[in-house]
Length: 301
Image 1 (cartoon, one colour):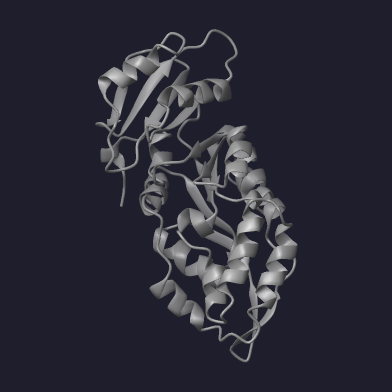
Image 2 (cartoon, rainbow, N blue to C red):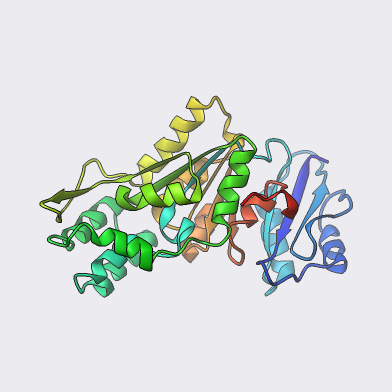
């Protein structure tokens, strides 16, 4: 069997059963018997299309069949299914917050900055221009407030640590690539277990933010270039790579990856990303392990 459909439920909401799996199998060319990755939560259905196959068309057709059921799905070739390079966005992907919004709260401008962030992630504003405008509002804020934000406000997205540590245990290289700031990506990457992190640098003078960021800004193109660079450095082909993010500045990286995933993304971003890859609308980050064929008992961390 050359291809596989993977179905994944959110943890704690096991809606998959044998009847549903066989119902969905009927829509696939030459399906094989389903294989459980986690009973009730995740399963593979191998299949063998005749000639070229349109994975996107199959995925959209199956989403219609699933209706309102909380099930994410991945349709892909089985070759290179286990990825050897993983790039991830940070804000609203590996963590549940937008760090700059939380910083802005300390100068009484969270609502203003969050509104700009939201428009930027939807692709309505140019990322680099937007970031400079938001950073300017932080001028004069004590830089050590970052420690408070990380300790009291930042929450890791469920499944992220398992995702990174399982992939690393199986030989993958992992990088946290963010349009946010090194003051956050450093400790967060270390906590989760990433091999490296890349982000923007907030300028500080006399212990306070200056309202400026080091140029050039790491944005959409820099994320794309990071994927291309790390792929070449590790001697990999495109199909061996995976990237995940939620915003417009993640799209180029997502579309260049062998498996690009829009994670609980804004509607326009999810649709655009799905045109080249996949999307997770319901589950947590362990969905990306099931997508690679890992069984629950193989998770690390």
